[in-house]
Image (cartoon, rainbow, N blue to C red; front, side, top):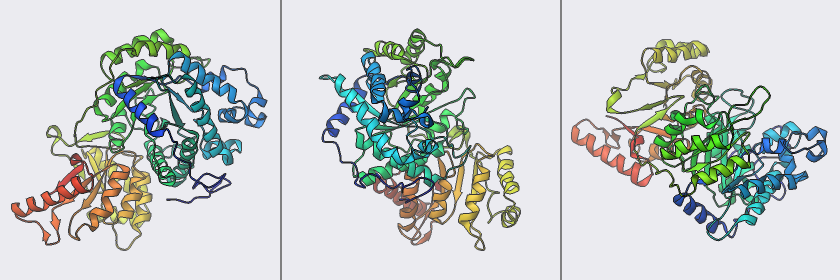
Length: 528
């Protein structure tokens, strides 16, 4: 677990006020059971916009705590909790099952822009308490209302803007998660996600928060697909879904950017691929030249009706520009409707910015091997000379020539593999959309590489040559970050040569990986 002190005024390893982890709520099991039951039985309704709802209230500098804090909506949790409560109450009265905390910008990273990073834990805790209290007022027997701990994308997309490290993102999300847990959130939501590297860091930060607390909450992810058809950092909906297959998520969703009509293809894709629930939380259309969102409740009712008829959704809600009227329309629309059935496919999928499936339809799957210092003298020379951009161009050239995956190996015994991998991957992922195969015998290098890839990569490779040592070092990385595994048919007796020996080693490896280590069968790729 990282222990960072950066530009913020305190270490980001835990709650700054008292240092103790948040206690587990006594009624948590009851609430989570109610949430699970509700999701099984019906389509749940999330609330509408928070930001535009707050903007609609006539607020002045004093409501935020001073002119220097005006616009920091999270400060309203401390200075004007009545305003935040009013937003929650409006949506709950309209029929929302779930309200989000007013913590979209609640990481220290974002609050530092207002010199309020030191209050991040406090703000998140109080925001969750406000939402929890609002829900309690609307709970009735058989109808529990739930608190979603909102965790926005920060102001840094690590693949696009830079300005933050992967470990710093982990630490920021970890602290925010702890505050939301302390305040009584029922689940945590990484929302408006624009870069899947940020998502990976967020999931790791949340996991570290759970380790600190000694208890867990469900986690969900909601991404933003722009009018270009991709997230800001380049992934399409299919690649995003594949990137998240490893995570045990409450749901995967789409929110913001557009109205529901422009989300149709992306929602259908998530519905087909996600082995968990799917949510759709659009804006009230695209803003006009004056920043107004003009798609009304009737339009939502019409478009969402088509989505529900197709059986695509488990949760619905609204983002920017939506009001209690939109939420009321959705609550009326889903009444009596059955939620989407969750698929149980075992498709061997990997992804970069785009997804690739290992199937009979696209065999043979072509792997580019020229970005390998052990196989290409030119590539080795370019890396040794520090010519990273020309070296990365070799990867792009392979894709143009038909490679569907690019293998990367930087195991030069005369060089620092960690340094070379970091420098090279940072450039390569800007040039290619296909998945990356990370080829190394060093698990630390593999883990570093996984922090640079948005998609579901392939780790090359593991075997039983040293017993379980290699499995134990690499398999946890595949499960932690989401990756497929190339498994060689080698054991303590050496490389399997005959058919009988190959089958013997393969059966043993398969049993260990699937039964003992929890690897999905479709994530095992055999090197026979």
